[in-house]
Image (cartoon, rainbow, N blue to C red):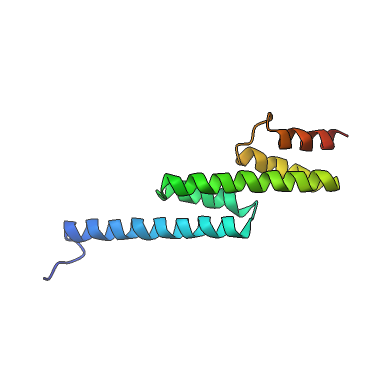
Length: 114
């Protein structure tokens, strides 16, 4: 068949393939950010995944991964009394949707106030 790029069916098929590629790349980035446990890469990967129609299940799992990671960083920084890391991690806690009522966030805030 001699269907050109201007054929509507070809255009739709091309668009679907591009969307699937974008979704696959976003999912790969999300999984990589979780595996690397990067407190900076995870929010970016989550944003890309949500705009690329990555399945909700995968986004939810990555958000849970991010929350766990932020809590661990907050706890470690609190124990070491590392003010700079605490401030960065508290910013990440916001991005991870950990509220002020989260016990780890409260403990970190208390360390900063000391």
